[in-house]
Image: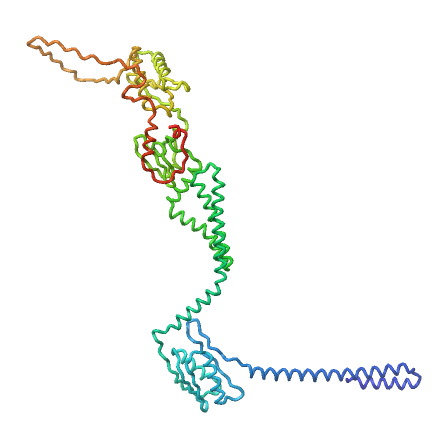
Length: 510
């Protein structure tokens, strides 16, 4: 604007110069430029005036809305159950008695903590009347009136009504809250029940399918049942996990998944012996180092296997006693199975005199073994020199027999009896162990002369030195094995638990 007069003077000068020879085209340009600058200044003034009016109008409207839409402050309880102290209540523009009364009455009625609240205001003094259930609400009402703008004093005449013993309102309120919560959760409960029911159905189908699929495998009944039920439990576990995820309990679902291994570990430690025996039964039924009816030796106990249960292995010993050995001990011990290979080698030692021929005695013993019906020809029997004793040359006789058909002890008794008879018939001495007694002071000898003639000595009875040529004597009761009798006793005895083993071939044939 300051530059306009200068520009006009300059233009007038230019106009004057135009009168002295400037063309009309330059005069038109001067008029357009002068009009443009004048219109721009006017527009700026109009825009500034419009902006000021808009700001004043927005401020007035906002002030009216704040005066007309002031919310009623509601009381708030703190974490310890006490009521929060009310803030200051302002009445604009001038706090008159009727405004104060109306404002406080509206707040007391809004809380619903007071019965028949009555507010009276006279020259700034507030009179409060009504009933409430506790002293905290009465104190809160007095503090509210004190903090109201324009209040000079407060006379709190609110009475605290004692609560009755038979007031069931809190109970009904809790019941209503539970009912509303149940109704909100009802769709989720229905979905959870449907998922659990479907999981149970699929678990049953899984168990049946696994049972049928495992029938063709050479597994024990316990192992098949454990594998089938493990598959069903896995399906149920997946269903439970889905229910927790649908309910929004993702953290609980993850905790359940992670805690399953921990729970198994805790249970394994708490029931260590039971768990160890059960797992050992699974491994024994899977490997089957022995079958029902096999003659085994486990933990220094020899007997016929009756059954394998989920906790113990039951044996019937050779003397007819039933022994139960924990499966963990059986699984960790050395097992000698005499039935898996029925052929067994037995041996015994016999001593001959130093004057007798060792080779001749060996030949005599081998002939006896070759002629004995219970001794196997393959593997061949043998007679070896064991050692040189104080008075005898000790020979050890080795021979094989079929343990499934013959008794070890009976065959050994028969072989010893036949070799002893053959040695005697061949003139081979069987001296006993010699003992040399030394008397350092000598032995006094005194001759006693009898008065009468000595009586003739009575001849000693003749000894029975001849051995019977029969293979088994009446005392040996045959050479057959006692396995059939012991197994028959085992069948008649009471044995606890379900058998996890299959019958052996020897048991079947017997």
